[in-house]
Length: 138
Length: 135
Image (cartoon, rainbow over all chains, first blue to last red; front, side, top):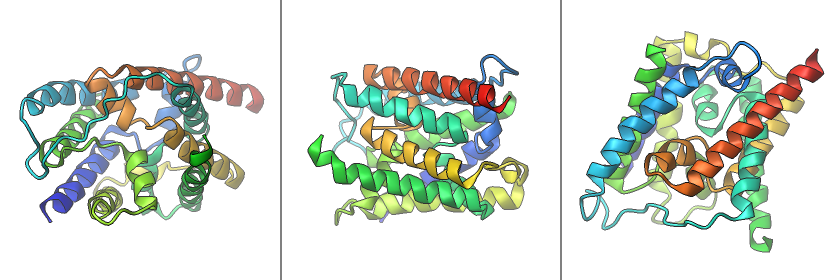
């Protein structure tokens, strides 16, 4: 129960962070990616604030032997750079630039009831489902 | 810019809370993807996290609606295409802007740095090409 409550609070906080920072606006994301136009650098501020905060707290937290509500930390340890990593990031980047939206903001934006947001989320779930189907063959 | 920084710090605190209490990385694409194929013991916290995001959106709509006013204004075909690429690409590449872009870079993961540089590069190219076609 503790873990479930924590996860809900984290999701809620994350959504507020996205909303306050303006990252729920596709124009802000596309404005950041539009290097050769009216460059909007607010995404850099969001990333900077988040990475600085978590960069410091991560080091403090990992001094513990385990998290409070679990027996061990589940942090990825993979170091290998495989084609999957780069190819996947490239496909994601194209979709991200195309819509100006990534998974987090798309779920937060469901509250608008906007038909394109719903279409985007359904198609994203479909893309994930198709990946799960082809993954064993990769 | 102050809004961006404050929002960023809140996101940094949120992912730190997840790590401190649950020992988990807050990778949103990964959490959605894993929730699609539920495991008995690891389903509830993932669903609760995604619920928190959606409820957070509702609260934003109530108290800070300007953040959601200019949401997706693209064609249905674009929503389908972009959504599919985001879903497929994030699972293939093991992460998105949260898992790689925030959590991974914070712990200086080489994989996450390469991922982030790649998706930003392809995002820039995509926006550039879209503007060219649009003109």
